[in-house]
Image (tube, rainbow, N blue to C red; front, top):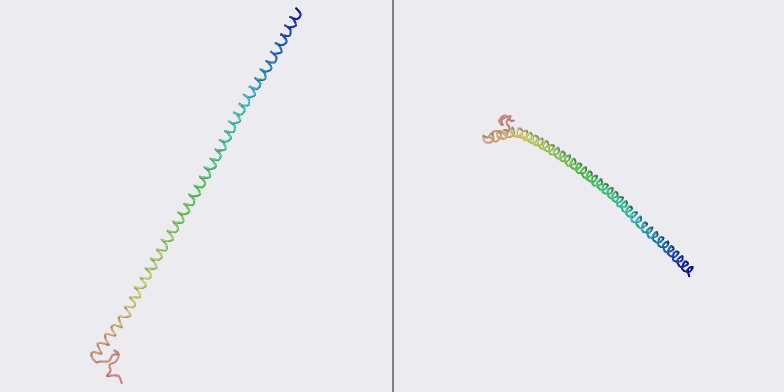
Length: 154
């Protein structure tokens, strides 16, 4: 009976040791799983932060490129506006030159017309006086020719 009690006690001790070993192994497995989950979560957080940083840098690069494109387009628009203003200034200068040439041509035409009127008036003046002389001689009954009287004509 004493041997049975010793065997039972030994069996209880073995069972208790086995249960303790199983519990320790289970605890180790649980702790390892928890550590793996914590490490995976930390890795996910690090990866998410890295991805966010990469996306922010890419967005900054895209925004900078878009801003450069907008500034370049604004520069092109400014250059086009400057070219249009220069063309308008050239057109205005050409119009002013054309107007000046037209004024000069008009003045020249007026001077020519005035000189022709003066020439015409000088040409008409002797004729008018000759016509007047002829009319006066007709009234007097004389010859129309101022050169010789009719009495002298053969």
